Image (cartoon, rainbow, N blue to C red; front, top):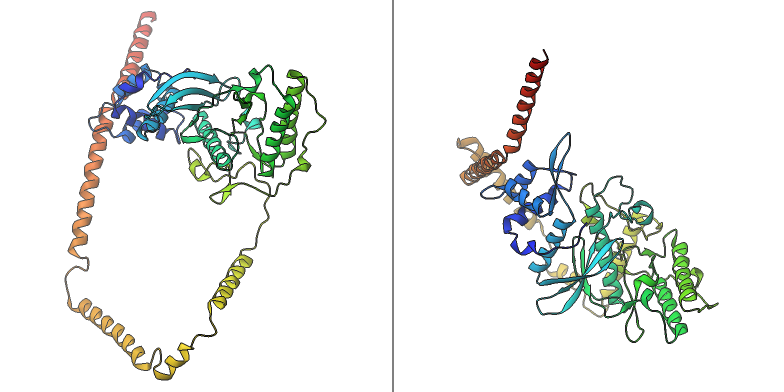
Length: 455
């Protein structure tokens, strides 16, 4: 988990990124991806997957792992950073990367610039650091899974933060403007200010205290609790305006521990103002004061549920948002009956009593369907059945059209050609097996020589 080094990024070719993407896809169901699988997924036109992997290992973009059962490669944060930056460059979101301006227990912050020269903040989520590994108790990304990749958890964290930031920004909350996200990286507006923990003096601590507490209550009235609302996640500009950051740990007010999270956020602010600015107030919000009648939703789900359909990664499955409480189950038959009643009411509303009854007048002059029309339909189907039976009894040719036969033969030939190309690529990458056989033969030979020496 070193610093972001983008020097090598400009020298990586298209084949290098194909191999990197192949390693990423292989890690969906492999902890260590075998070389044969990487070669098969990358499908390089001229082969050479081993050479590219050795170069990537040299630049610490991927890591080589060798165990008793299998040896292969795994993607590390350096390669994951390159894949995310490559996507941002292709979307014309970013053009250059600047200095690192912040480090946290879960992420790194960098200054970046767009092709138009506008500066943004790039947040790279890096879960799995030794300072913060207790994710089972502190976060809810993994749900009930036992084994998960740190890269995948970082991806979920970035998705959740972008979803909350976008929803809050659209509803007028003081948060950075979200620009885009990909994998574990989030691009957002660059805030000109300082963290509240670095501000030693305030002109009016009471007004700042009121603004911060009103922000907590406003969040709760919209159905959200920050979960980590402290002086490190609040930014102040030159006019003492507060901007809220860091949202991956947000929970809903329907969470079964919502009151504990809310009281903890309030207590953090009260303790900080008492310790830093010697300001204590008897007025502070409680969880019972909030209305809780409004819950932010986007696309039919609560905000912050990071599109759990996206989580069909290694062992992905459908998961619920941690902020959701127990919901009432509805009877499907009641829902269907209610929908039918609504449709009937709509139809009755659409009927205008002043219109002429066209149905009765039509029946007076000409029926909708008479016996001749019914007989015509039956006769038509009977003639078609008779013609098919006659053709089946007389004809001796194949019942499959020649166009279908030609298409099947063409698909079979194409499949054979692709299989031959795949075998050629795998054969070109089999030098690892040969090297292992030579090493085994050398060990056997040396052991036999040793037995002869001592015999």
